[in-house]
Length: 372
Image 1 (tube, rainbow, N blue to C red):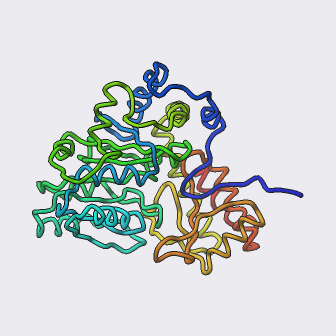
Image 2 (image 1 turned 90 degrees about the vertical axis):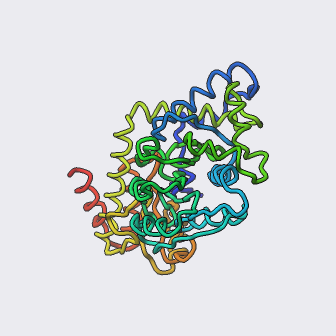
Image 3 (image 1 turned 120 degrees about the vertical axis):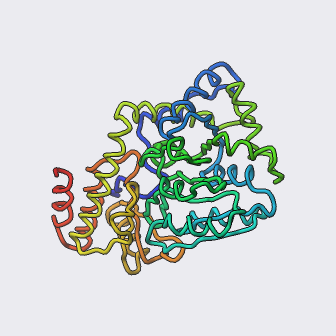
């Protein structure tokens, strides 16, 4: 029976380059041995260019949410006043985590198709000088919104609040300049723009955020950042790591560095613009306005989107993502992050054209963008 070659066009996990996949098949080694100690700290240091920081970067074995929980568990004591900026599923995850750790909650809600408004943040902080931490998402992949983290950071003015950022679906696909923008904690993970299998999360703390660790009274063990600090001094992790993911990431960084980080960002912007032009050429409505549009994922409005996605997967072998939260079954999302090229975008648009019987319409529009 004929079988489609599966085409994964979701906002993570993303397709993994064969060179990276091969590293997952390496023979197992001692995670306390010389080979791992040689490679591990060097790989983490190379991530600094993507985070835009000189601060140490720590790796946890777990999903992106484990990195988020590291941030919360090391900063939020019971009754710590925090502000969560919620404009989608993952902004809400920050709120859920902070609630689980007993924070005194402040929440600013934004429409689930627009970016965070820095002025609203500034106004709220002006009324609440007690807030100690702000939690936000750089790239809200549930809605395909890219938030202006730099402007939110500036909106704090001289307020004392730390700014904690989820960059899980943006790191390596959009600029993150932690030190320049004055961010205090940045979290990311392996399975998105870093082109590596799921299983590792990364977190980095500014010196100002680091000062909060010892005074935080939340119970924590696996996620206690002080353990990771102590073991990184020995070029190790406190607990058994996802060893081969380190070597996979090493290979992925080779590819990113060979392309050049600015070129990587430009490629993601090009793919975003192609998808948006192609969708509009088909008469489809985009969820997000151009000025808030993510470079790594695009959300398209579509009635009964889940049955549509099933049809696309079964007939063409292309996998799109569904909506989350209030957008469940009302949108589909096209991932264009990490190991993806403009030709992959043309493939995604072609199946939309065929399903809608509008042959050549979207790909022509996308090709015009690609050659502009």
